[in-house]
Amino acid sequence: MKKIVLLVLVALAGWQIYAEQSVPVITNADLQLLNEPTEFVSDSPPVYEASYSCDGRQHCSQMTSCEEAKYFIQNCPNTKMDGDHDGIPCERQHCS
Image (cartoon, rainbow, N blue to C red):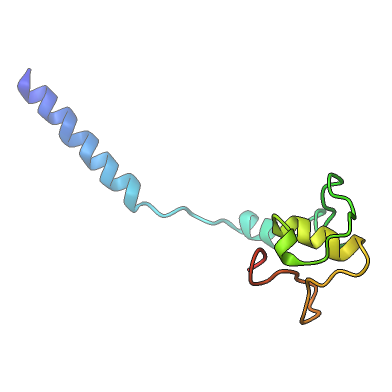
């Protein structure tokens, strides 16, 4: 009985080592899938939650997240959160 248990443990250990070292095979069909364009690519700017509203806040210190800051610079007037005018607000606080 002990020999059977020992044999099973050795077989399981061998299988574990084999499974960790095996490399997945990439077929030509997989390569074709990688080269096909996807339908989800979009050049339009991201749409942020409508839960934000233009309430007069203008500075990064008044924001709680990067998403909120992006909403404000894209939808609200007179914001002062994008000093280098690269489209990324609050780079030091929220959008690093």
